[in-house]
Structure formats: C-alpha cells, structure tokens
Image (tube, rainbow, N blue to C red; front, side, top):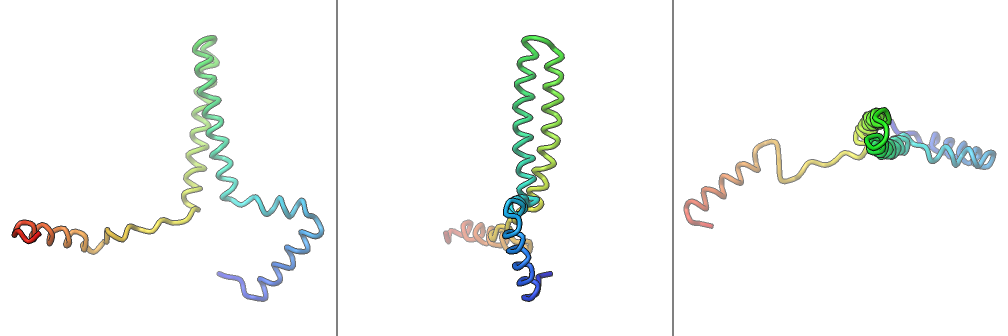
Length: 123
C-alpha cells in the first residue's frame, strides 16, 4: 500500500531531521537493506567455502583432524550460502516469461503450421 502524499512529506522531513541530528546513524541506516545483508551472507559463505577447501588440503598433508574441520567449515558455508542465495533470488526482481512461449499453445500451433507448409513444399 503506497504512502499518501502527506505521509511521504512527513517521512522525508523525519529523514532530513535524522540526517541533520546524527549523520553517522543516517548513513548506516541507508546502507543496510535486507537485500544488501543477504549479499553479504553470500560473500561470507564463499569466503568460508574457500577457507574450508584450504583447511581440507592442508589437513590432508599434515593432520587429518584439520581436514575434518575444513569439511565442516565448507558444509556450514554451503548451507548458509544456499539459504542466503535463495532469499536473494526470492526478493530480487521477477523475470518476465519469454514472449515466444505462451501457455495457450500458440507456439506449438505455429510450429505445426510451419511443419505442414514445409511438407507441402511451400517453404
């Protein structure tokens, strides 16, 4: 439900007063949208995955318990990353369906018509 014009003006005034009163807080609040937070989780998960791979390789050369810790780190990072990525995809812009494929069968009708013309030699 969109805000009325009066509510938008009031919100703008509140934002301006907050920015004038505490600029650091206003800047911090502007940069932390849920979408940004989910992207940070994905980046941290990728870093965790790389650290896990490094621990796995190092542990294989030195001590097997380090390999186990690396595997656990990779598993945790993958779980966190997949969950965050799914939330990013769910909140992101929706993709429009392809205009060539329609649900009422027009695409298949066109293909069948082309096939009939080709069989008759009308191509």
